[in-house]
Length: 72
Image (tube, rainbow, N blue to C red):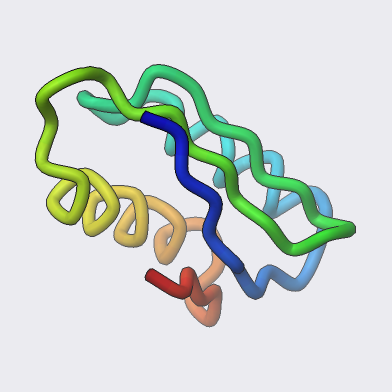
């Protein structure tokens, strides 16, 4: 399943670091965070609990940029 989320991220470098961190989370097949459009596209693996995986993604993003926001 693929879902798109609106995000608030302050710089392109941070967006790239967040994308890399999100891709490493169990349950995520692929992820793309576009700084220009402020959108996160996540492809989930089959059978995962999406809310739990996205909470892990949010925590990973907060480690990179403490004031980032993912609208879930």
